[in-house]
Amino acid sequence: MMKKKDFPLELGLKELFNLEDEKENTNSLNQIIKAYTEVIEAIYNDIPKLKEGEVFIETLSVKILITTKSIIELAKGYTLETERKISPIQFLDFSSINILTRAIIESFLTMEYLFYNNLSDEEKYFRFLIWRISGYKSRQNFFAEKDKDLIRNEIQEKLDTEINEINELLREAKKSKYFKGLDKNHLFKLDKYGVPRLESWNTLLNNSILKNEMFLIPYKLYSNYAHSEFISLIQLNGSDTLHKNSNDNKMHLKNALRIINMINCVSIIELKNKFECTLKTFNNLEESTKEKIEFWNHIATERYFHQQAL
Image (cartoon, rainbow, N blue to C red):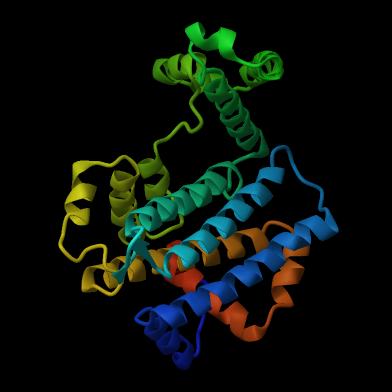
């Protein structure tokens, strides 16, 4: 049985209090993303030996970072103006915040699906091949056949090169024993337009180390905003919903920042456990910063509770 991780009571109380204070919340988040940046930089500086595709751990981590920074900027609010006057009301674009929060969740789930798991190297590599093929396939499908004459020569050359890349990657994927396990639906999608994940986002979230009760319902809500579903327009239609200091918006912002905070912390822990250089960099962080990250990682994940039950 794993020994319980004890955190100072003051730390827990302070972190939970910060959730209720927007300024403290964003200050805390800025501290975390500075630490995340340092851990990512360890990959640049030490250049560890990477397995096939692992360079995208760095790319997806940076995506989480810059998306988090964008949300912090959006959280400041803004005013609307005409040529004659400026609105006295400060607005909060919580719709965009929700969409970007969804993108952060999906970036982490992608890293977990491809890299942060206990699968064999062979299966990880197969997943990476299918993911890569599907990305190229999507780009091929951007242009309708009738529009091909409008494409610039250099773009067409790139598309032609990628067709060859797709065929080469497909030949490689078909050698894997996991290719034989694809069902007819997966094979159809892979041939037609790609299938970047062999499981849905909801399934990935259900199987994730992230606590379902904390992330699944918010993720579904954020997905509605991404597609302008009616439920999202109901939320936007209230008289004071877009006002930055309305109770509804304070709640929306607090919930989004809490989720973003946790995803960043879990991502840091997963990255520091991946390479020796990232572990060393994490261990050299300020003790208070490490405790904050570990605290929110434990709050966000099921791993600790699963281990306790063993």
